Length: 358
Length: 218
Image (cartoon, rainbow over all chains, first blue to last red; front, side):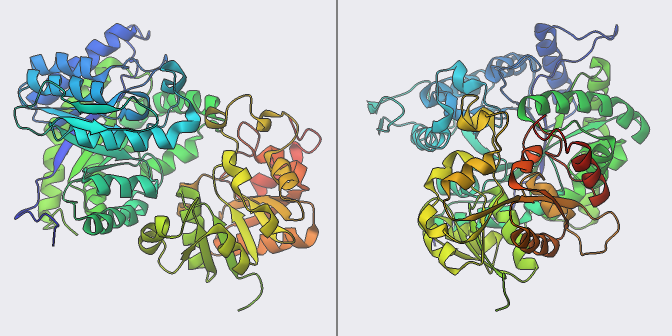
């Protein structure tokens, strides 16, 4: 049996994810893109102090999100933090160059003493394609080829590779090498079965982006990943999930801050895609039964523990600060996540005698 | 096997998988096909939709009473049109301009994408349905008939009998069927139109459909 067996399950880790949404200052006005980026750095520094395991920054190329180069921001965070893992979330590999992605994250790994993580994905936004000269009709093949090349680069040996969408490589050696010989790499998936199988094929840990509806409906995808990993003889020990949320001192306060910000965000994206505006009914449904982790520390902790248990994942990342929220409320949220929510989730899981495996 | 209880679902992505799950739960026999050979989707189907039969599009169509199109709209010309002559076909696809392009044939402000699909599928009986509700709402909100607040699915088609057949299927899948009119009326169900994204009950859906009756292409 080629399946890698580990003697014990990895401990559950907790992350915070941001796309660099533009927060509001004390005067109620939106911050500049530059200030929004510095805000994320401050939040990551606080998260590190409080023992949050990872910060993941997603790439966007549009006005409402300040982060287009996650690894630049992560490098700045690296210099100010000690332990926190520095992840992208996601790196849109289809419209990037695998060699460059490797070089940048291997560099980040160097400056952070081995804390870099790449989360590869196809992304759900399309702006990067025309921006970097890619054709959206090549969406599938671009990702397929580039993940194959990236998997080769991760071996940190000279690479010989050829495909149809990028120049071939002939015994190309790529630097810097990492000290561990292993650049930690995940694949972020939004629910496409073929993407789940692809992650298993390359033996990449999976991160499920669960951004709407009941989290339990993703349980079959976890099974699919495990079955596929078994067929390919790869490991399926690490499975994460990422969902949006917001934490304040009370449920009422959390909803009061998150609802208008979330609606602004949702409706703005919806206008470009043809979705109807978000209704309060739908928002409340998502908070109660779906994939919005919004409320007091106790409410959010219970919901996170329930999802971790239902899906058998061992990494949970909270996408925080969606939409134009007060900057101070975001920083307070990071504090509550680190000091109250994470310890409470661990406590709840221990009470239930949980193990990460199903 | 009772009439209209065997489905072919073309498209094994998010929507195809959810529709298969709902149909299996309702006691249907489901043949599902991806873009290529059956073995490409065999594992997904075995794990995500146990009981469904993974096969090719041609084979699935041969077995089916009703064919559901759940593939990306931009790939509609890969559908084996000759095999669909005379078949009842539900078009659940949508025009996503971000992917399909603003200059696509589907960008026509008047003609619905389902009419373009119908014109391509010569001889098929095309009905537009199961396209306006997001796939995760379909899965979360399926309820037995008579459940208070049960969500509604709109149906647009040119033939009353076919519309009724689709209505029975929609009901079996867990939604109140609402026939809103001929296929051309289905424009109202498309992205950026009044009923796109609607996961509302029958009364609310009917109200919006009726209010916009004189202005189907607003």
